Image (cartoon, rainbow, N blue to C red):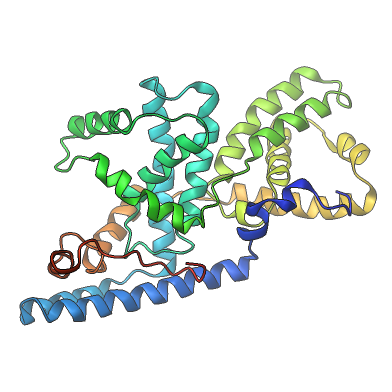
Length: 336
């Protein structure tokens, strides 16, 4: 914690994907407003090419079921939680090596969270965006697999569940450029995992209880994993999140790491650091995942308020594709 610029401050993650809580909330609220406007505009356009009575009914249903920014976030969170399930699937299939699991998972989650800072679920429902972010993360984290290998475990799982729909390679590849564009072609993601290992090695010089330190380090992974689903990544540096997670694990294991902190940081820096760590710990411990029931209800509403201009099942989309070809990408990002 010195006054000198840190290496992380020179990264695109720090410079372009860092927000205050107020600016993040404002961005999401504005995106939702623009998304609602597109839904209603699309429905009015569809009324010109569809049965008028049917269109009037659809507009009325959509208007009653438009998602709020909070509902969008809950649905996105539900699919973010699914990423850790898919990690398990690919690990069991031996398509992901153990040393790649954490980074692929964290990068996929980060990509999806960034994507929905410039897009809304009305245009791009989360399931296929989640899969595309996951597949893209395997490439970025040097754990690449062929698209056929990526799809196979998904298809097998869907078949076992008796799912009526089956994921195809086009469902993933068709969105890949859209996702990359929304990420502003910035694919480097920095996670707390590397930072926490550095802290663990450094603490061994100052803390005598080596067994307790090791147990604390192992337990920290649980809190880092939990932090991935919060907005902490948009507010704090990976090293700060790592240390906040370590403090939570240390409390649980009854390990005092304050001696280490006082040795490593001066009084002024430590005062600021403790405030930051308290905020991070609060963000981790208060996080609550979206339940299945909540997600089902929001998903039901989304079906009724999809943007027809982006919905392949809508009359408007089919007519537009027939006349113009592929529907152009629409984002709420000012940078596009």
